[in-house]
Structure formats: C-alpha cells, structure tokens
Length: 178
Image (cartoon, rainbow, N blue to C red):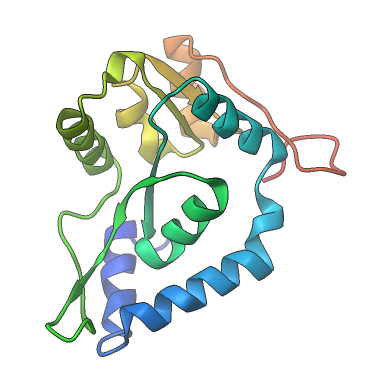
C-alpha cells in the first residue's frame, strides 16, 4: 500500500532485466505447484468447472505477471489469460520493462473489453469473480458481477449496486480466508 501498483510492477521488472522468460516461467510453475495450489478455494474450482460444463469461455484476468498468472490458469484448466507481460528482446530475454498498458484497475476493464470484442463474447452475459477495489470498473461492465470475499471498497460497491457477494472459505476454516 505504500507504492502504487503500476510503479511496483515496473520497478520489479527492472530487476529481472536479462533473465530468460522460459526459466522464470518454469520457476512460476514450480512455485504454484509447490506453494500455492492448495490455497485455491475448492468452491472456486467447482465454479470454474461449472462454467466449462455450460460451454462458457473461461478467462483469467489478473494484474499479476504472466509468470504468476499462467501457472494458476493452467492448473485450473483456464485456457485464456489476460495479464501483465514482460517486454522481450530478440533472444527472448526480459528487457526490464513491462508491456504497456499495465493491466490494472480501469485498464483491466479495457483489456477484457478488447478480448471480448475479438472473441465475440457478450459482457452482459459474462461473470466476473474478484475481491479487490481495483476490479470495480470491470465488475460494472459484466452482467453477472460476483465479488468473492471482497475487500472493503469492493464490498461497499457491491452493496450499492446490489451485487451478490460470494463468501468462501478454505478447508478447515470456519469463515472466509483472507
């Protein structure tokens, strides 16, 4: 909270200049498999499967970097990912810059609108699950916004707009995990 997200992302990318995207992606896969997969709420896995069963196009839209978002999407069977990517040189090495525009807040909504226009997806018939205040712009565009364990700002926006709020918990917990 001490630094705007975009600035943090850009600054972090500078430290990775010259690194191989393939090697960083392999690390991302390993970290997700070993340390993060168990943190995915079982109910959210069921929801993703239900959307697949209904023939919906399932897309992960994240402000995370590709090395973080794509391993999660693959593990969850999500074929399409909209996220932040690195600029690469001709050898596939990171330049130290993140491709612009940064997928965050209102720009996340723009990125999803672009994807939907390209793929013929109706936003009015789409669902969007998220927990953060920065996701309100996209929540307002879809026909079925679904805040999940929303933080304060998104919870307030959900209440004002009458959006159903989904509360989920991890196995072994009595309430929503934070």
